[in-house]
Image (cartoon, rainbow, N blue to C red; front, side, top):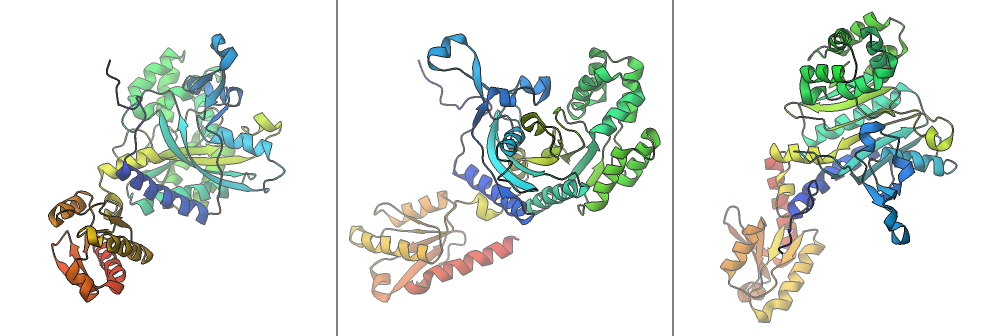
Length: 445
């Protein structure tokens, strides 16, 4: 029987080009997060199953990858551990566990993989990385405003210019459902249906409302109240919400404070934004990009989640960037700099013959000391074959040190893009290549 070499559905192997793209995106994310005062955190790949169950609603519980008991308990078929579903619940556990060791206002970022037993689709995987920021300890709207500013800055730095930060509030959702005539016991199901609006459209949500026991009149009223008007300024949407919920509604006032405090220009208050996770208690946020099904990330305030572990509520708000989708979109749009999409090597050193192999090793070491990324061709071969190999690796320059160059103390450097070959003093080779790389980078930008 032939064993399939494909990875499991919803997972991927990451080849060198993939890794370079991921490292570039992670580097931008980490730099921006740290510039806002967030510190790093990592948690285990798996958690005790009771830590995760009941934190994501019925839909989320179905997507948790459970780990069966092992050894003498294996025959029971029961699970006692589960793969990490997100980074928020593990954070809540950490805050409860180390409450006396953490600062009053704890701001952390976390970049690690999570697992969900979901149906794979374009940009949707069973194993994927999340890039989270969370701020613990304050109810101030400045927390949400800074989170919006940070994720917006990341996307702008990566080259996105067509994204929108959708902003809403869980209490606004509840108020609109009440105004539409949906009974409180049906709110949970209604929000699950509303969260699918981008995927199944208004007609699909209407049918799901009916299937969940919401009357036709209430379903139609819901869709009208939750109408999202593209291009409507936040102030107009907030005024419209205040007209339904009352001018003194605290949730509308909270949204107004967040919008006023945020410097990001891409904010749109969207009454239809639901976000299905049940632990959100206040403002919720999501990044929408034109022509993309789904979002590039989302989050919100969850003031009650840590209390599940600690026994008392602690204010908390966070956001998770969908790195996998960001990479997919950037790759499709050719948004990565040429230095990232290239071979990851600045120059390759050729091996002229067996007698000069030691010299080639020394030259490679010298170029590395000059700050270059250097690959050494592993054996003597015809120069044409060595050039062909370097070209296949997208290496921009090749260094040649034959008998003549060795006698003159020079290096021949060939630009594989232009075909030009230049003789450079051996001691100046690294600096010469670095200048050329910088010049090409400026030209591309």
